[in-house]
Image 1: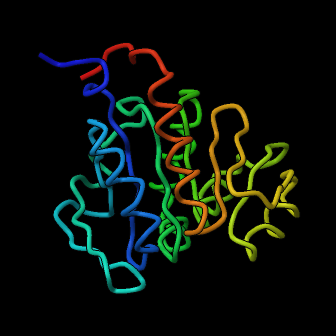
Image 2 (image 1 turned 30 degrees about the vertical axis):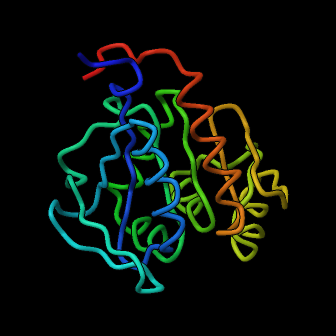
Length: 184
């Protein structure tokens, strides 16, 4: 029997040099809570290493094989991963398509770089790693230097120290959301 909780699926966009804890902490918590997390990369079955070398992740699916409408939440860990992914229009298009669903987008540290590349930050309130904050301001975002900033369907955080609050906000969002129409 598939429960509403287990039917919810998270798309985690991941590239090389992701921040180890910003991938591991939320994905471990999501999986422990019964949610499916699909790690989506350039190609399926590729092993990616975190920038600290402590965590590796294997991509479950290729970006060409996924659709934004099939997911309940989009997770964008930080590190160098978002900078690499934003150079690939397939990832930028996925982020833009996901935003049109109105479902929760959770980005931490450098993760908002993908939101910026998709031209979504103007007028939105969010946070990010300190060096990314000024870029967001220049693009018309309202930036707060806080552990977690929620704006409509977005949850953003600044750094690894914010992960407990960031993860709680993600879980609360998924638990509060009703079932997705056409859930797998």
